[in-house]
Every structure is written in C-alpha cells, then in structure tokens.
Image (cartoon, rainbow, N blue to C red):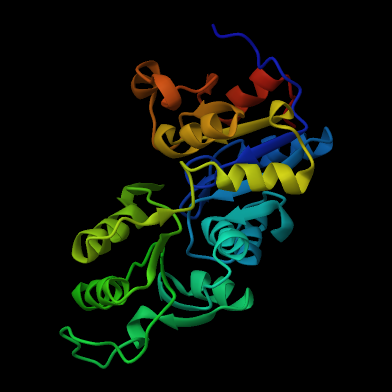
Length: 284
C-alpha cells in the first residue's frame, strides 16, 4: 500500500475529462471530493485541455452534475492560449480559428478579430490564395474538420500565419470509450503545412504556472489530479508540482505500474474516494 499524500495542499488542480466526468456523466465520488476540499479551505481549480466550451459553460456543466464550480475556478486551453498570446505575441490580432464555437467565443471576448475556418474561403475552395491573411491560426478540437478546413488552415500557415495549438491530446475519454482529441486535427494541419505548432496546453507547464501565479500559491503547496500520464502528469512534473494519477480516464492500473520519468506520478488513486483516503478527507 502506498503512503498517504505527504503534503497538505492549499490548492488542488483537477483535470476534467476522465477525472471529474466522462462526457455528460460525473465520475462517482467526484462531487463529494470537490465539496470536501471546498469545506476544508483547499482552493480548487479545474484545468482542461478541452477547448470546446467557454469557462462559464464549463462551470454550468459542472454545477449541473452537482459539482460546485465557478467560472473563475476554470482554466481552459483556450484561456491559457489567450494569456500566452497577450504576454508573448502581442502582435497577433487577426486569427483563423479551427475549433468549436466555445473557442471562437473566448477568443473574440479577449479582443481578437476571429474568422472561423469554415468562413475563411468560398464554398468549394480547392487551394490557392485566401481572401485574407492572418497573424495566427489557432487550432483546437474541431469536430467538423474536413479536407477543406485542413486545406484552408494549411494555406494560411504557409502564407505566414503562426501555427498555435491549444493542445495536442491524441484522444479524450467519453462514457463509451475514447474519441479523437485536438491532437488529431493539429497533426493533419501540421503535415499539410509542414510547420510545427506552438502547443500551449498540457503537457506544457504554462497552464499550471499561470494558475499558481494567479492563486498566489507555491508549487510545493499545490497538487495536480489527472488521468493522462502524457498530459497531466508530464505538465505537473515540468511545473514542479506533485501529482496524483487517477484511474478513471485514460490510464488503467497496468499502465500506471509501468510509468517512468516525467510520466510517473507521485501517487496513484483508483477513483475519487481513493484519492480522498490518500488526502485524509472524509466524503459525506
């Protein structure tokens, strides 16, 4: 049996897909675990690589599942991308968006001039110049992706737009199994454009370090809870934050035993009740 978690965290950062819910179904015990943390004075953040919805929409979804959350507690790969663009690429104003309406809405609310990829060229586009040039192509999970959209995005990048990916997850968990993630879309555009993207979301540490800075919490006082060794756990390692791998999403017990290097978590929990035991929390 592994030892109990050796820190009393002031801040816990949860991934969403596979940790708090799968699709539209909450993971058993997740609501009680979050409530116990709130009740114990532990700050909670929800950090998701999924870029399909806005932060208020994620908060509404969580509350609808009985999981108490505010929009201020949610960080998406889109919001992390916006923070990065404002801090490091202030020259980016006009963007071509390959992603869901939620991503488009967040980019627009942050002041960017956004053209959804579906609207960026005439119907029947088969190559050639685009009507506009863009400062950047922002790519997230686009469930309507097709050959035309890939061609438009690749053309914009070859014409000089920066290629920025909100995340590069290969897949994400749903109740029935797994679906392709944003990484599948990013990979298609990368191959077509022959340009490597700047990836903002996990496994890069920027999302977690921004959360620490805004919360005023040191990395030693924080804990990351994730289900994906290649994204959540690697990002935690790179940010210097200890982590727990829960086996309710991408990874199973066999996978967890074989993890090494950056992919190896500090602790493993089967599910939210198991995590509560490690933290010494009582679930009501």
